[in-house]
Image (tube, rainbow, N blue to C red; front, side, top):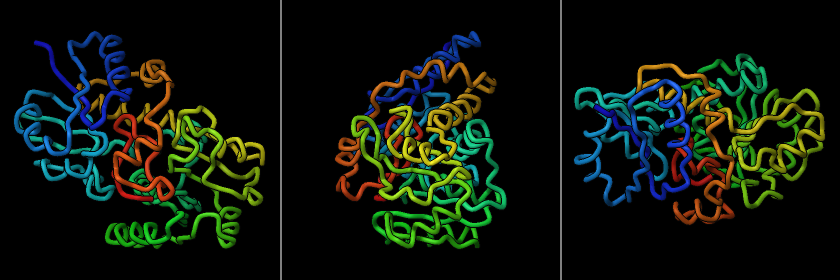
Length: 314
């Protein structure tokens, strides 16, 4: 009997998850299907009651990741720390919630930048859902110092307060593109760009204006993966930094979800080869969907696929 899996969200037509999971099913000869299911927020409760029990597991994208916590019978400890779930597994009618983005981010750091955050200083740009998952990953890895910069400082301070019960290490927060930020940039070992600024089609934009303190000792990751090199990445690379985009994070979080749903391992290259780097959901559409003024948006570049997090402003 065919086993059904899915990804839910609203909108959902842009999702790359079916391409990746279906390619893995074929590679391993599994009798599984993976569907896109457009579920509006007002219809989520009904969908969870009627459709979720029919699935072995499902991935979750905007705008449902936070609400998933209410439906879970059990949660991985990271889920409460991140504040969202992107993978739900049905075990005998009980829903288990996971967030695979933390694992995906850390594996991407190791794969693309050969970077271990332990005892390092990391600067995170943005204060939305993607930034929170990145911060959790860094804290879990033993980061020595964590700095955050955001256009609207109150959102960075809010995240600092939300993470304090889980991690005693305090973050330093800066207004994006302020003079004070230049020193934090220079001192950081790793810079992680988590906002959608510079995503297709707005490829000429960068969240950072001044790159004067970016240097050859920096590792830089931009969670955007379309275009393959953002303006932010290009400017950092020209200053000598080693740069990487967010494709590996997308792949590794997807592989982790696949393994939880199927109980099988798969070569990440299968997922990578299946991804068509077409245009993701444009920032304007993401902002409109979440009722966020575009000028305030500094949240999640991954509105497509389960790599997206919450609708919280950046």
